[in-house]
Length: 251
Image 1 (tube, rainbow, N blue to C red):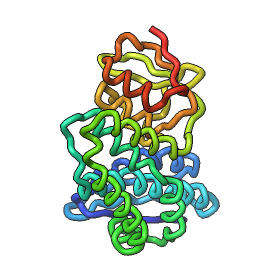
Image 2 (cartoon, rainbow, N blue to C red; image 1 turned 30 degrees about the vertical axis):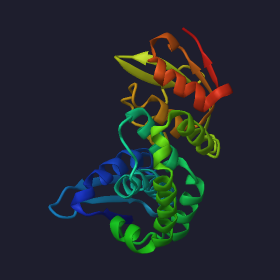
Image 3 (cartoon, rainbow, N blue to C red; image 1 turned 90 degrees about the horizontal axis):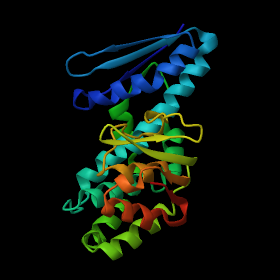
């Protein structure tokens, strides 16, 4: 029987809940079990399966841990250390998500290179002690953001800066369709099915303030807007300015 314990300090307990959600398909394919023990101080997520299914489970763990670090942990690091003005929420969200997505393939490779699974994996310890090089790279991004933070308040210059960063992000999906849903928006693939938001590290509760930023995370090769007349002009102008010829709109 293969067994592994993933733990983290209680202050970041939500990380284990997200891991549990992401790992569920791998646990199912491995015919394994998964238990989250919400103990005081240090919650632990325990996973187990038969030895012949170990590869399925370890693959899921390494992929999921890497995703959470290069998305969730990086976002938290940038928020904590950058000095971006928040007077315009649409711009702030977009710039933050663009910086998180910037160079994420390299970030991910570095995490996977440093990640070795044993019986117990302390996620905060791994992050704090084995990923110093990664945080040093993030600090360079923070310095870049802080040095250019003034541009966020000047719309024309900010748009050019944001567009430049977005154009460096590798596309993660061929096309995406945007439609209205319950006062917000939902994103679907070419066949009309709603995308797996968590798999793309996207919050499914998308509104006017987050539509642009979540599309930046996806970085699709083509965006079809099916509700152009229902999107506030400022938000739509930002979408058009950032994604340019990738955008196709319908009323």
